[in-house]
Length: 379
Image: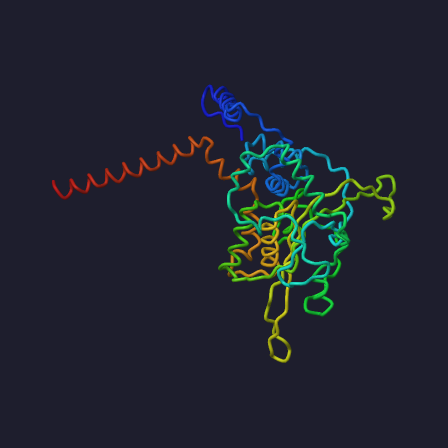
């Protein structure tokens, strides 16, 4: 929006921008983007997920420019993303081929391949480590070398690239329905405006790029009150997925004629929802339905919340706002929500003055009426 409220407004805006830069630099310390990328991994992952752009270096630069504000960094990333040409589409990724770093199940104690705790804050004491205030680059490098020698990662015989899905064993027992392949082309929410009702591909896209706090809050609402859901995490896995594109010079697009262009880290969650199902004999049986969540980087809480909302929107229920796709999908976008609320800071002189005029006219009219009534009562 290009508001210039009064004469000289452009100059005032330029000075405001200079002041913004001054606030970022006034302590005489410049953040290094490489250090942001190395030390703010979770924030990098959040910004990439919400902006639908997987680029750690660019996310670090956006965070630096935004002075650590996730909303502003996502705005910058989305704006940059809109300028990029779309030259290729990657081949469909099979998440079973993930090179796993972390893999847990809350549903089973023992799972094929074992529980892999990996890197997580779940098992820490949540106490501030004041020693970090004195941490140096040399100490960090030394610790990393010692850890690499002691951890024995090279001696681990587990095939982390081909771990089976936990829920496949429930499918083999017939306890959850089998997943049928859907080869229809997914809808792309970045190329067309959202229309209701939506497809599941559209819902999952919007959920995965939704504002982390908003998605988490609505997932919490679904658990706590509206719908009273209580799922169990069947499997949560974090790892890298390889990305391939077809040979642009080969129209047949054969599997062996593809190009590896890199990998992305994702968090994937499958949750189980117990449901009472009425059978033909009149008896009720418990069956399990699924919720699915996936997002860039390591963002476990958001991925679980996505799986909860995915299940809510798949089942649908007019009683609960968390099951209403328009309510959920239209209110979780970081850029839309931040932009709409922030626009209230921009000049609204004309509209507000018209409201003031209406209030004054109404008040004057009421006062005149009261005076006239008083004169009639007291001639």
